[in-house]
Image (tube, rainbow, N blue to C red):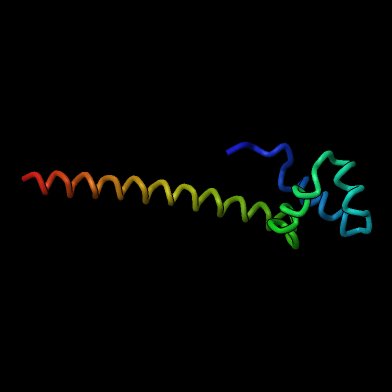
Length: 87
C-alpha cells in the first residue's frame, strides 16, 4: 500500500479549514489535492479529532496483524490436513 503524503493530523487540519468557511475548491488548490481526495478524506475522517484518528490507525494496524496471524494459522491447518490425508 502506498504511503500518503499527508499525516492523519494534516488531513484533519485540511478538513477543519473547509468546515471553518473556506470553499472546498480553495482548500484543495491550497494543499494540492483533488476534490475527490478531499471527499474521500471527509468520508473517512469526517468528525474525528487527532486523538480519534490516532486510535483508528492503531486499530487498523492491529486488525492487519490479526489477519496475518489468521492466514498463517489457516495455512498450517491446511498443511496438517494434507499430511494426515496422505497417511
